[in-house]
Image (cartoon, rainbow, N blue to C red; front, side, top):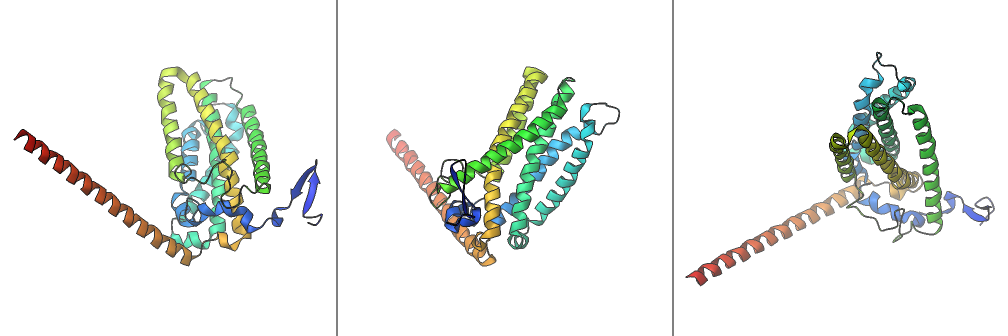
Length: 302
C-alpha cells in the first residue's frame, strides 16, 4: 500500500476510502436493492422528513414571528426563515420522487435530499423543543441551548463517522457483516413508516403526559425524547445514509437500473401473491377446523 493510501495517525493505520473495494461496502447493498433505501421505496416515503420538519417548525412559528412578543429567539428568525425555505424545497423534491422514473433517474440527488432532510428534521425538532421550553420558562437559556446542541450534534456525528470508518476497516460492512447497529440488516425495525409512527406516538404521549405532570415534566420529557432521537439519527441513520450516498457516487452497481427494478417488482408481486394464497389457505383450514368442531359438538349432544 502506497504511503498516500495508508498513513498512521497516533499509531493507528488510516486508509483512504478510495482504497476500499466495492465488497467492503456490500452490507449497505441489501437496503438499496430491495429494502427501504431502494430508490422507488424511498421515493414513496421521503416526504416523511419534510413533513415532520413542517410540523415541528409550524407549531412554534406563530410565537417566533409574533412581533408583540419580545423573546431571545427573535434573533433566530433568519434561521427559521431558512428552515421554511428548506422545507418547501425538500417537500417539492419529495413530491417529484413519488414518480418512479424520476427516482430511478436521479438516485444520487434523491440520496442527497434524504441526507439533508434528516439533518434538517433533527434540527427543527431541537428548535421546536427549545422554543416551547422557553415559552413555558422565561429564564430558559434558549440561545445557549441551541449553540450547545448544534456543536454537540456535529461532535457526535463526527465521532459516529469515525466509528463507522473503524468498522469499515474491520470488515463489518462486508457481506454478512454486523453493520452499524451491531446486528444484521433488519427491515422490520429500520423503515421510514415505522419511524414516522414512533415519532408521532412519542409526540402524542408527551402531550398526554404533559396534562398530568405539568409544563416542567412535559418539557423535560420532550427534550429527552428529542435528544434520544437526535442521538439515534446521528449515530445510525445519517451515518448509514452518508455511506450509501458515497457508494452511489463511486460504484455504479449501487444505482438500480430500470430493468433491475422491473425484475424486483415482478419478484415482489409474485411473493405477495404467494403470501396472500397461503393466508387464504390458512383461513380456509381454520374455517374447516371450526366447522368440524361444531359438527362433533352437535353429534355429542345428540
